Length: 238
Length: 170
Image (cartoon, rainbow over all chains, first blue to last red; front, side):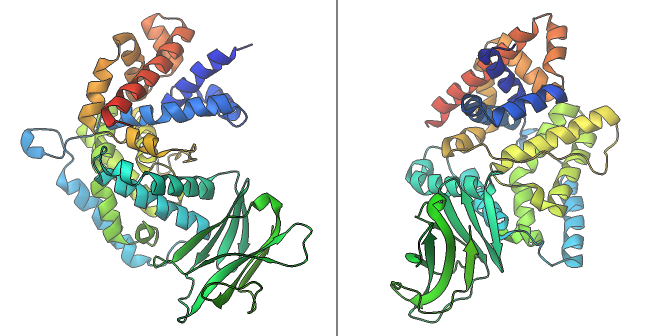
């Protein structure tokens, strides 16, 4: 019987990718149920990624460093551009996955370009919040409730609405979310919001998902309403 | 990235520019063959382009590094690229800001950090990660007990993280 400390050593080998498939599967399974080992994995994964980055080649070919041939990029981009002209229809994915991917890449791109000592501090709270959103949107244990044009997603008590192509509203109008508590007969007002300019609107509702039976969205006057004044554009039972 | 998801070639080109040095460098380290490294780099990026949904969130650099490593070892094993190599899941592990920052320290700093590790910790890490061998093979090659190899890997990765934390200031 393996001790837990030995299991933690196994987690390190798993993070590095040096376990044979059967042992890797066992560790992966264990990670699903052991918070301590999951935390160890979370701690070690960035170190493994850093090991990968130690092999990154230099950008400066003039220094004599080994770099990929510019012809390689030309070959890749030739195929990419040919593919782009053949198929311009976006892949259909659940709204939350598209939103998550875009949020992730926005953050990753930002981090790549920043100096690690500067903007990290300033943007910490915002990015931490975005990190949480990304983690929730992409989590395998999140529950998706689809409606036309979007998803309501819950993960534990966290609750999100993600909508594709939400139309811009006339002046004086906003979208408002509504929640129906379990056992309640009337909905309660939640947050108001407008459409994101990038096509996918993601809104986190402050209510605990575990206490709710349904979520809806309607168009209301700026400032929100106490009860819906228009027919909901989306309504999802949780 | 929404533009990449929507098959915008210009946006993809930016992605290529940001990550090709990581992909090519990692493939080159594994294969020790510039031609093979270019083949892997091309295969990885074209797969990302054709199937962007395979990336399901988290640290993109970490994910594409895993993809590259798998592809490179495929090539080592088969001497020819399979059309559909298995791509890893990208399930994020509750990654925090400092984790992302740590994973993206520049290559020179990571190499310096690796050099600070005791040799008995650095060697199994590099041998396993770049050499594509299992911990059992490392144990056989070094004559060390299997448990010792795993413990040294864990100690080394933890120490590497601490060194990088100091370098980054998180």
